[in-house]
Length: 64
Image (cartoon, rainbow, N blue to C red; front, side):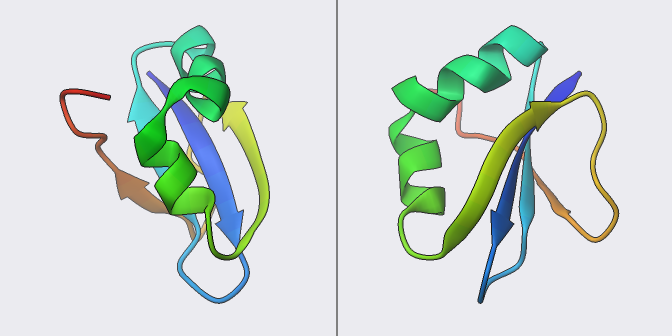
């Protein structure tokens, strides 16, 4: 498992689960779902192999 970590300013920071780091990195540029999550108050986004402390785990929709 790998995670796309989205650090947000006013909302809960999120870790979106993907099958691999490559898929998580691709989601940064190719996912409308991730675009929506980052749209308002994203401070930073990166792919990682573990969920950072304090981040909420999210499962992306099947069509992502």
